[in-house]
Image 1: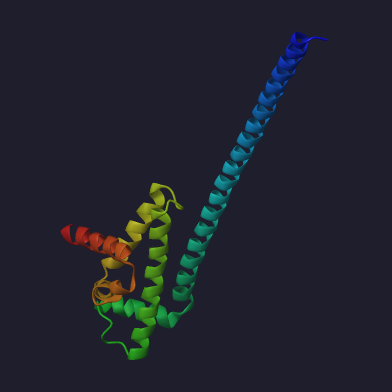
Image 2 (image 1 turned 90 degrees about the vertical axis):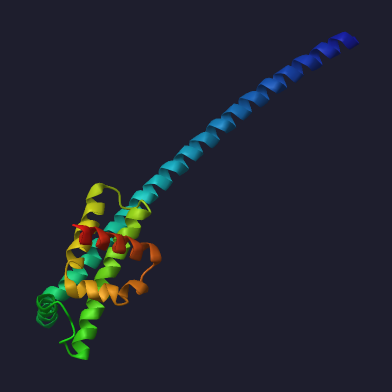
Length: 174
């Protein structure tokens, strides 16, 4: 066998090696792409699951707040008295503390809903509308507004407090 024949065989083997490498790499790229797509689908599913869990948490919190009001005649009477008189000044210190705790819990529920909307976990105009309607309703109550303006707003993050304060400005301009 001469050198030319060996050279031709070497070139043929080199070409076969290049083709085999290209086939191998194309298979690896497809496997990698499929794995990436599967991970993307899993992440989307995880996001949907987290959003559903957050919705359940929000509903649970709303039910808990409502249960406290509806199951406690005393708290319901205190809230009605405060709403009627527009102030909590006539209440005993213990009653004022109870109303204050209820209002803080209620504002925390609205804060949770605000951040779930802001972070894109709750999607849709219904959630945004419910947040605005709910906050507008309670902020039209003079006693609740006084509670907010007299320092409760300082207990909440600046961006949420700013949202509530902008809502108050819109209510005042109506």
